[in-house]
Length: 529
Image (cartoon, rainbow, N blue to C red; front, side, top):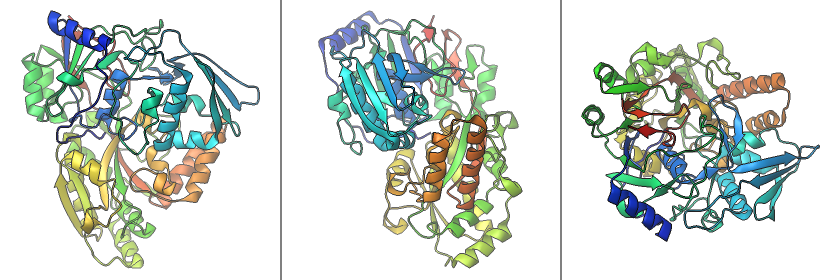
């Protein structure tokens, strides 16, 4: 989800002795370099300010997390050495591991972690819900802090170990104290890689070197958890937007990894003996259609519902993915095959009802003003979603003004609440990795807290009550029922639409091994012969 392209800008990073030494040594020796092409250009380096997946990937290079999700989707301690919870489940105490250091050599402290959690909690929907239950956080000593809750909350560890956007990455307090709605300028973290600002050129490449002082956990790497052992000296993210060029480059050995090549080029890669396909994210992804709830006509729930009655998932999946081998038609918001999966009633999102859509538009008084549909042209898996939506909505009685733009322009424009004819928007598409949307709290699109909600800004107090109930519920069976109720509420108010699950392997040169199964393409544990 959400790669970015933008004009070049400079990102600050402390050029400490350790950084200079690490960079110089690596460059001089020309040791193992891993060259990686991800889905889109990396231009925003603040993983709290944006949910862009390319920025999330960057975050996993240079930052670390208190907890992390392993390959079995279990939450495990990461920066935390031990934790305790009181018998009434309201006081949590966290103690950090020994030897945690920022890239500038300063120790990681409890104050740093408290500030980081607060900044993340102001932007992320799962973080916001956690912070609703937090009374206070305070340090006990340099390595220990407490989180006092107002009442028991069942998703404390799930929140702090959230695997994908936004990720609760730990930052130095001076950085984490930055206004959550303004971008940070420093790239100082405590993670397994150091960002080399001097060699990075947005639009061309981003350079990371192994952090020589990073102390990984002793347990084996699993998913995003366990020991983050870096087995190469240097990673370069190569910005190469043309998919055919990517395929040509990896076959020629000019690059080592591609995050997710287009499905129509997979046969070419399968036929080449020098590369191998890697199913690094077996849970897959889900396409999403998002409406703007604050601007006409989608501020009217009947118009949003008319939009959902036009949806036919297979049209999207055939147009974007192609082969049924790599997609699944499913009306479950919380991902087919997982505990909270429920089918929507009456074939909604699967079988369109254009006459119902037209009737709802008439009831709503829709005046025929074209809805502004933003189309991304620089992210291959999303490029064909908007044309499908245009065709479906028009069959249902809408007039549609599809406006094409690069993904970064879309990412910037979707933040605006202005009327569409003044630079705003009505509807756009994105996608999420399945690990982000497994329940009503982690799923960004289910939040309906108005201005604090994700772009589209739905405001539904009833939905927020349901999400609170889910968060408090400790009985798995009752929690599952609440998840079903949340999904039904989202359909009733047409909060957004989930329009198909899809899967796509990455590709690696045959001499590259160790790509971990996780919802994020991480570069530790990977070796290059």
